[in-house]
Length: 154
Image (cartoon, helix red, strand yellow):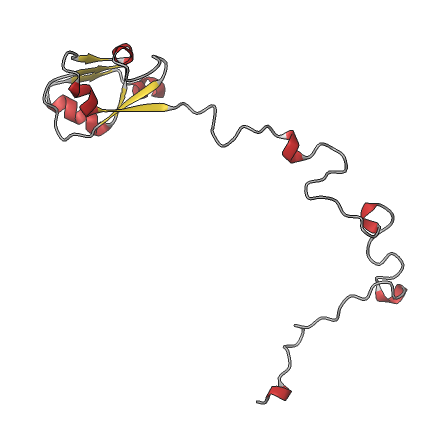
C-alpha cells in the first residue's frame, strides 16, 4: 500500500449540497428553506429558547432554587448529647425545645447513635430513632415509645 493509492471507504464521502441550482437538484428555487417565514430569510435566526414572542418556557417556570420546599427537614441529635444532660430521664420534643436542641416543637427530630453503650436508662417519647440507637437504649434498661416513624407508617 502506498500513500497515493489510499482512498476513503465507499459511501463515507458525500458531495456537498448545492442549493439554488434548479429543479433537478431537489434544492432549487427556495433552496430547501420552505416558503416565507423567518427561517426562510437571510439572517433570520432567533435566540435559543425564543418562542416567537410567546413567553418562553424558562421564564414561565417559577425560580425557586435547588431546595425542595415540600421536603420535611429532619434535625439529627446525637445520643451522647442527650446523655450529657444529667438532670433528664425523659426526652420528647418539648424537653428538647427547653434544652435548646431544637428551635421549634414542630420540627422532626431523629436521635442517632454515636456511642457504643449507654451509661444510664433514658426514655425517648415521640421522637424518631435509628435501629442502632433503639438497641443501645434498650440494652441499658431504657425505653423507646411511639416513634415518629411508626406514626407516619400507619
